[in-house]
Image (tube, rainbow, N blue to C red; front, side, top):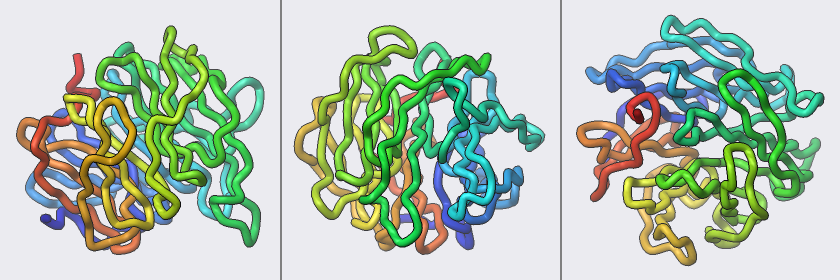
Length: 284
């Protein structure tokens, strides 16, 4: 395990650009840091609020789910950030209603994206008490709509390598749910894909090129690895920090895992035996 960056304030949402720079959101810092291949780490953009999940789109811009901050001091929104670090609000409402606390997002092969919009718990409650939230869809023109309501604290989200399956974490139950994608923005009913168990709170995840799913279990200090068909975990990767939040692939041949650790404020890396799924901006 190698330490890539330190002193980050609740790092999340790692994403690579086409030049090999790693971008990491700092949820409690209200900013996004960029780690260059030479290890230099500096602030790339200041978003305010609570930037959470991020991913590059086919246009080369960074799309960020911003939950508005842990105390809800700002409205939730989806932001778009260009190469200069200029931040704009891309989405502030869906179906005529303001967004709640956008958490994470994932692009499909056509350049549309799906994102989670949980409803946060009230004072004195935990994630396990969260009301039902939403799973949403948007194209790059900002045409957005909800595709599902009913998961308690929907969190990490991604489209499978084949583009036919949408996976969504339900943090309060420890489960990941699969939706068959019928057409862009239209999905079938959810079914349980896998389960991290009673102590595992599924957070961010990534696919490798063969369809294996690597999910961060927040609170467990490990990545839970599942085969393409789901079911029981086939492998675990342990980390020093129990608060692992998200994972992405990068490095030569996209065969290195980069993992965000929220408690220690770090990004660490570890080799993986297979290539990662190719994402934008490298996906063509």
